[in-house]
Length: 274
Length: 284
Image (cartoon, rainbow over all chains, first blue to last red):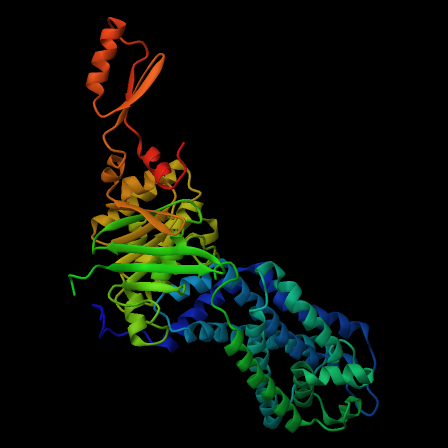
């Protein structure tokens, strides 16, 4: 129809990677946000790890070591659910999405860009938290490849589920300013009922345990503990088993549910311009 | 194909709830033409432009933009990307991209297009060459809009939409921005700009389409718009005034009556602004 038909458009993957680069540049140049994103879980781990002391009965795992994998799960949830949700809400408000809709860009490239950004930030956060765990609390990293495999699939499913939920929650955020309130509250409540700050998880009252078990964070934390801590700590878990099958099932279910939520609720437009 | 206009709109309707925002708009824009959509706030300028851009749905009427119906082009296919590649959109009040530099921004958006212009050249055209390495958030309001124009142009579009591009500018920034638009128009780009500034429409556009309450109340070249008031002029003197087609006769008559020079004599044509205010129903 138009004169440019027959021309070659850049592929969605190429554009997605370029968007990832631009997103990362923008992210790392905003120093206050970067500091907040990385410092919150690191400081929490360092503080809580130093405050609480003791060794769990039947194992040589200290309270601080127990906290480390849980904080990795919480840190990932912060980067994906909280940051991604707020980031997309502000993209909707400041004109980013509107501008992209006007460009000849396949919409998937936007999400690929967010994925690239999220993966890099998640990786950096994990390295940072593991380093704090090893340096301050003598956390011993596993040498068994099987444990790293466990770490890998819990990470993949957890990041996917939380990212999709972050994208979905961005649609209920009215403005970038209210993003903090909308995402931080559920995040903090979940962190508590998932046994992140309140350790060990089995010490939580039964109703809170049930509540926490519905959401992905509890299973991510449990999955990371199963990868990074010796099995002697199982006595401090709710069930004396790492429940890998159930973990995979629940995280996968959240991935599917999150995807459906995204597909049905995602809006390219802000509330102002409908 | 070259016979069909760049933009063709017939009987465009849009409702928001029970309020009719557009009540039957007709509009044609030829290739290479600069058309200003002029009207007060709420007249339907932005709704019209967003429907043409494919960013808003319509409730009735026919629309073709570069030979394509924006409501049917979709988001994903090759046809959609071909069409989008030929259109440049300059956003009204975007505040995105703050942490990128001017150069990074324009180079990034160049990547979306199959045959983009040279980013450095586009930055030069909008007069931001010396700010290439400046973060976008440090730009002034006028520079920020120039960057938006650069992003709108980098794909080498055939049709450019500018939605109230100079709102909030100081007078010097407006003049400079007008120069930029004239340069664009001189290069043969088809431009549809919305504005609520009469002088802007008059100085930039080949044709001014005046919208009021969702209807086209005038569609003329700026000079013809001024002539809409007819050839009546107002002759004023100390103690009276008269509207007339023939000021010479009135003045001759007054000269006789005063027996010499007429005290406080002025002869005025209605300004474009008078015509405009009349058109949109705010007769002074």
